[in-house]
Image (cartoon, rainbow, N blue to C red; front, side):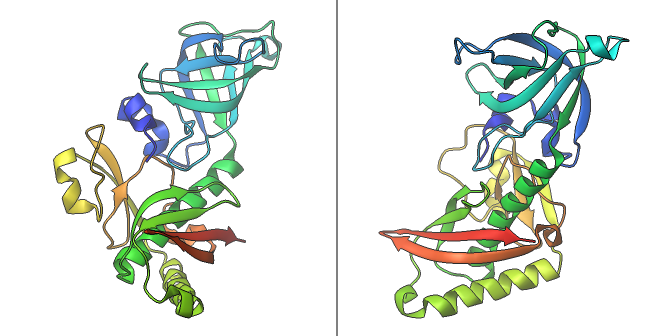
Amino acid sequence: MNESIKAKKLNEVKYLFEPKLFTFETKVVSFKKDEIKKGTQFYRIELEDTIFHAKGGGQPNDIGKITSLEESDPNLQAEFIVQEVIADLQQNSIYHLGTLKNEQLIFKENQKVNLQIDKDRRELNSRLHSAGHLLSSIVTEGLKLPIVGFKGNHYPKQCFVEFEGVIENLQTQRDQIISKIQNAIDEAIANKLVLHRQIVSKDKLPEVCYSVPQTVFFDPVQVVSIGDFKGNICGGTHVEHIGEIGKLVIKKINQKKSVTRISYDIVD
């Protein structure tokens, strides 16, 4: 779960509702040298609204650029290269960290700016994140395997979902189990199941989620579900329908103690 939802009001985090919004205009709240990366040319910008996804919930942050809009001469426009996006829960803020294209051209409070994210990176991250949700739903609800997802990593070439519980006879029937999961996933993708997003109050979570964490730190939350499956809490970006994922491939299944890890990837 990406707790950046908690860091800003829901209506300020534009990517939750419009994951395919790649450009947006807003205003600067603050601009200053980054205190963490002292001695570097890193700055941080806080905005009234953002389309940049903050790192968290197993999904990488967006990258892109922020450009000032008020100057009539393009040569006088400040340009900021966004390299990191972090959610500061203590300060209730999302910060955009990066470098200035020209150190002489800086940003001011209340200045109008244009945001532009890396479209290809966002779309890949959304596909990988949705793929993890599909895998979890298929395994727990679709196939009724006795395991429940609790953690996911959706970074390119590193994707996996970890489940509480173990699959009996995995050592002797590994290939058959992988094939069973793969076939169910292929069918779901072929049917282009719709991915649903809804904002749900804390007390309603058991009705719409197949698993609810013992501690939920904020209220309400976004719940993501696929087709007729129940959902789970998530603050990441996703595809509109499962067909957009492409080919999802199960790479391997490992079990250690009471945890099952299923690794996956998507191929074009």
